[in-house]
Length: 270
Ligand SMILES: Cc1cc2nc3c(=O)[nH]c(=O)nc-3n(C[C@H](O)[C@H](O)[C@H](O)COP(=O)(O)OP(=O)(O)OC[C@H]3O[C@@H](n4cnc5c(N)ncnc54)[C@H](O)[C@@H]3O)c2cc1C
Image 1: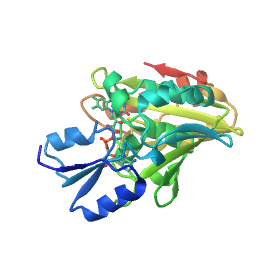
Image 2 (image 1 turned 90 degrees about the horizontal axis):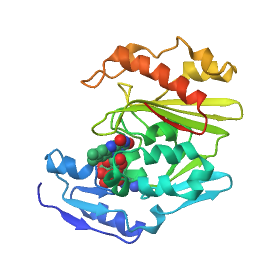
Image 3 (image 1 turned 180 degrees about the horizontal axis):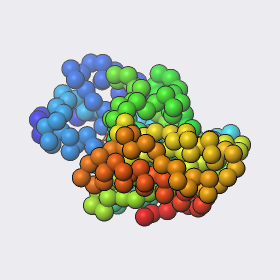
Image 4 (image 1 turned 30 degrees about the vertical axis):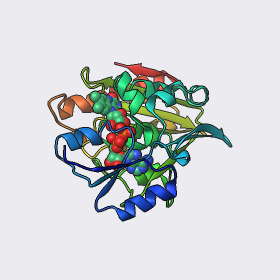
């Protein structure tokens, strides 16, 4: 790892000032993606600005029928918080299924979203629930936030402060995971609100997390999981790697989506 300067600002203003004053700064949260990247010499920022002591990025609450989670909250905090467990139990279960204990104690929701790994769990819930992402500059809808593999709408120096989720009537998550890393090989988050379904798929798409609109349309017509029998996303849209080929991933997405629809409020691990 190269040398770098470490900063731990106590306010948003200080973090933004440090970013502007540094040669090539990067924000640090749980470090579970950034530090391995630096150790592998794939990134060499001059300054690391640790966001974890900034109060604006902390806290979990229900505000006016929305669940609001600070960007620096760890996966453990999200999975074990009574407010989350009550509001969207499947979302709490998703957070509890990420990685292992160490990953869940260090990794943060803001870091996971900013990184937008095509196999990360949170993007599917954020897209599948139609959440809003508040930054130090603006509010972005989930539909405009994710922008392909490891890419988001975040601009240089922009900081995610919190994520605001509408509380759905039902939500569920089904995934098949890599037994070593626990990252999904394919996973589907399904939510329903006002008779409208949202279906978001992670781990499987060759352009990162995506909404599966064909499945949403059939579910909106009221046919339930049976209406999805025989429906699969296009194989050409799927990732192809040593864990699974495109045809297998497309098949998994169909099966996992039906399982999620059949188990509202639950996490289904395969
Ligand atoms: C062994 C292992 C297993 C894992 N398994 C899984 C898994 O099963 N599922 C899964 O989803 N994830 C998994 N992860 C990833 C992990 O969950 C972390 O969430 C993820 O690495 C990023 O979060 P972080 O807080 O560690 O961010 P960091 O590594 O600190 O930062 C990641 C990126 O986000 C930026 N950033 C961080 N916070 C903000 C912010 N508030 N605003 C703007 N930019 C920000 C940083 O500058 C950096 O570019 C795993 C990681 C490891 C090491």
